[in-house]
Image (cartoon, rainbow, N blue to C red):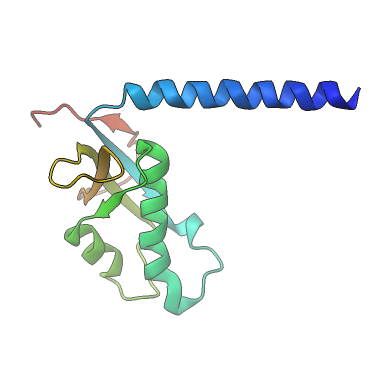
Length: 135
């Protein structure tokens, strides 16, 4: 009965991989606007590592959302994260994730994600939304 379980697990894995491949083929340019809760991601982080870790977490978030290993953080966003110093990182940040084609160099990945800061007065009632190209 052990081997059967293992087999079904491998089947599940295979299914997952297939789905991933399909998603990769259809990957296209896309802009999403999201709120990242940095507060919960930096809990129990040493003071001197807070802002650097926040940047890492933003990259991780963008990578998950946009499925691109190459994530580039905008200067303004970096400034915002560091705006209150290394230890008092803002609790939340509203970002625009722009998945773009890698044109210039023959990079490993076809796409990269450019993360920019979106200024908002309040994070209340904001949901993740897809931004139209012309905006």
